[in-house]
Image 1 (cartoon, helix red, strand yellow):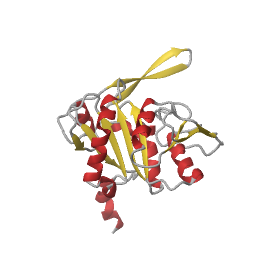
Image 2: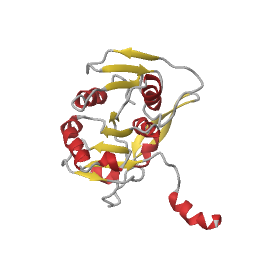
Image 3: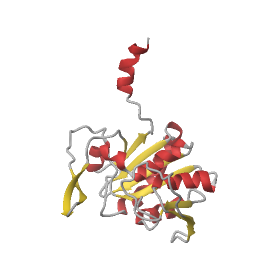
Image 4: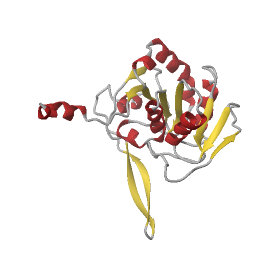
Length: 234
């Protein structure tokens, strides 16, 4: 969601060439925070462009999820895997519901394509670049793409290199709205993370320096409540 010009996208595209044929379909402009939104009221531009990675590339004047839809439903190429990112900024805990990077990954699974969303901190992509090969080996060794359709990966900026399977943690970022004049307000992100000592959470894993690999799904069912209320169906 950092646009076709994203540093993390270039890094990921160059790395992914070792896996096979790569096609980039990315937003024309910054689309952070667009979650899983799509545009169906108005048309938007899809343009074939040159990219520093040298791979076939297209820009889409819409959201990350629409980029996936264009790739699968308009270009109609037989994609085997969607890689979304590498996002500049963690996608952890509660805040993944807002992530365009994760939204793109989940959109791929709607259409039967396996996906991995990848993110790291705001300051450097160095650790992510260093451990991409180790991450892919972990996925291959444990056959993760056979066991789950979509995965959310976060690389700490300073990491011990350990890769852990995690689950979604609690709040990490929050918005603090400021009046910037007249009727205009603007959100400013602040970190609200608190360590509760649970090593299984993606938030704690990344803050303590390990790489978080979390299975995710677009299923919005509240399974605890659903199971409790099955008695009403009898």
